[in-house]
Length: 181
Picture 1 (cartoon, helix red, strand yellow):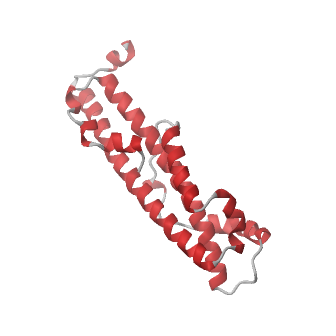
Picture 2 (spheres, helix red, strand yellow):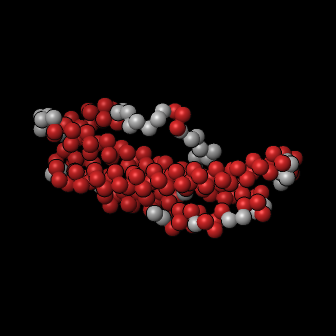
Picture 3 (cartoon, helix red, strand yellow):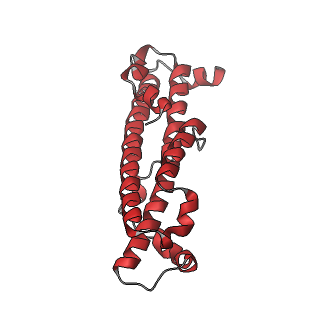
């Protein structure tokens, strides 16, 4: 999906965690968390566009009056507030850091813009139904890819965190060691 994501998802990136220095494990975890933050951010951008395009297509299916940009803007709170069936607060993973990976964010935003650019969102009510449907399909495909990548990142972050936890649990690492470094 992006070169940085390819690096951290390569099995070699996580090879032999028990022999890696603690500082390296922390750096790996921070790097992966930044990528996950980027994935999460762009996923929300994608979801917003999916909701807006889907809302416009629904308005047309239901025979709503000819839409206007003003009408669309007025419907945004309703469109964007819809429950996406994501599982609620229990499924949310709070980030340890909010710092995204700028390179990953830029690359994923470029993919999103290639599907349906920000400027096009102001003209959704004027777009042909076929263009909207194709865009919605592509947006859903990108959302699936980003969601899959997020799940992969969660597993990788968990693997590194498990090694850090193991070291503290077994006494290989101590809080005193953390404080003196």
